[in-house]
Length: 288
Image 1: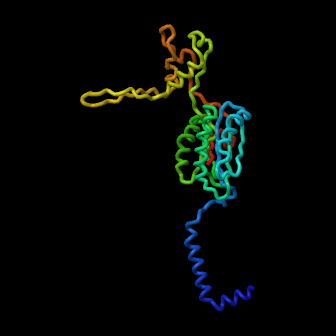
Image 2: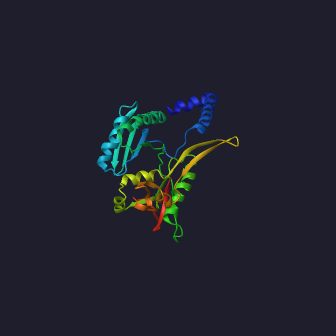
Image 3: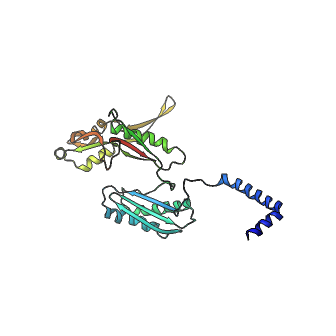
């Protein structure tokens, strides 16, 4: 067989040369247009849905979060199987598609199903579809630390979360950046039950007042002021703990009762569920 191929090539060398040039030319045309990745895609197309449910146990997350989402996406066109995992405060659902399915069309269909699924979920749960990622997954870790402790963990987390993370996400090809470690700032309102009873208030009253302390609303317009129309805005955005403390809850016997009179308001760190370090020093790690 090999001798026959050699004889054919020698006899019709011109034809073989022309065919070889055509193959090389077609390869040169197709090569720059081929998709490039670190590794070939070894898994079937998958759409991942995540939902945070703070305060719920794993079995409650399964019952109230992951099961309704699974039910909503089951039966969708091109779905091969639906898997899920439930943990404390977190539910993840994987929608595995048939080979060759268009991932972008499938994500659109899943998003439409999630709209109907929200009716059966707790009010505070907002499921979302995670970004499309490469099989390479995590490619880099960036660490922010302060060995001399001149920068607080809260300042490092704020810089990493709100400044550095935003710039990295703007880089083409970056799907997600997750910040780990440090301290997330939050305003904390520690209510004194004795003071509440003194003013005949409830925790709900304080929560509603604190929630309305950070807002911006339209106050209408002033017309015909030197032939101009001047808009009026009500700005009550919180920039320090004192802004919340001075918020009025209600009037008790004709006297205004503020949050600061029934609670201690301060800037603190959110409850930590994990930590990060570099060389034994507390740090903020960005996973890209």
